[in-house]
Image (tube, rainbow, N blue to C red; front, top):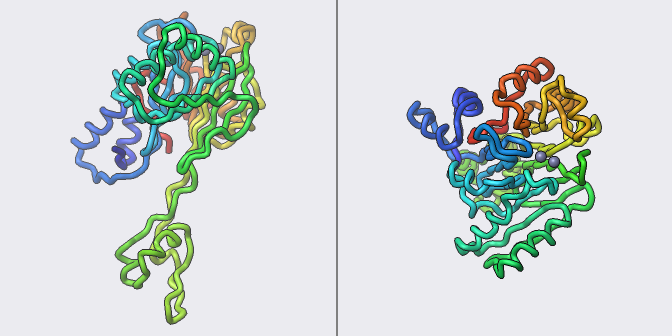
Length: 338
Ligand SMILES: [Zn+2]
Ligand SMILES: [Zn+2]
């Protein structure tokens, strides 16, 4: 279920609560609630290599009105899905950026659980080619046969990898110690909103409604034109989200994610450790901010924090100095992309 939130709620939601809590708060404030499509991102894990300070390794879930897209699947991901009440059954596509364990060690457990829960619908896995061998080996040694079709889509070159009715997904290369991919999610153009009452006044047949939503004018039997704007209103702007995975500072990334509504960029280290970041093919706070600035992203989300840091406050302080509209990726928080 998806609801339209007033701007105050959206602001509060982004800063404080998981999606479930947003709705609870929203309802108690008795705002005018309408069913609409909403694009949101929930953080399941925000730490780098080693889990620490109650922070799990990387996993995120991007939710639309129709389905959920799982992005990376670090150890513990399925526990996090349960904790934040995100249904496994809504996930039809899983994207794995690279084969460092903190990005996929949770995958075999999740796939096995999906099978134990008698999943029937197909599942699509987009990942580096070697992952197929790894998964097959694990399943074979356990004599486990998945009860659903797992379609493996190896990532070889940059470009479109999912072309759905409402969402397209493209992959792009990022610079890391091993082959690593980022993912760019773009909503498709939404249809114009139809005002059915006004359409009836103009005696427009229901069979023409689809064309109205595509923006066509209506011409009645007498040859009179009913301008489209008389019976429809503009659709909401399609939204976009880019996930840059693990990467060294790489200015070419900015072009690949130009103009996105929300950009996720890793900040494994604070700015003073830029040499260590470069040596390990990771980034710092101000480097992530520079990419967001060059990309002209509307908003920046930072994560993949090193386990050497207990407090994350300094990550935000340093990043907002360069790119103001930044937020920390906090586990359980839901970020509405608008
Ligand atoms: Zn990592
Ligand atoms: Zn990595």
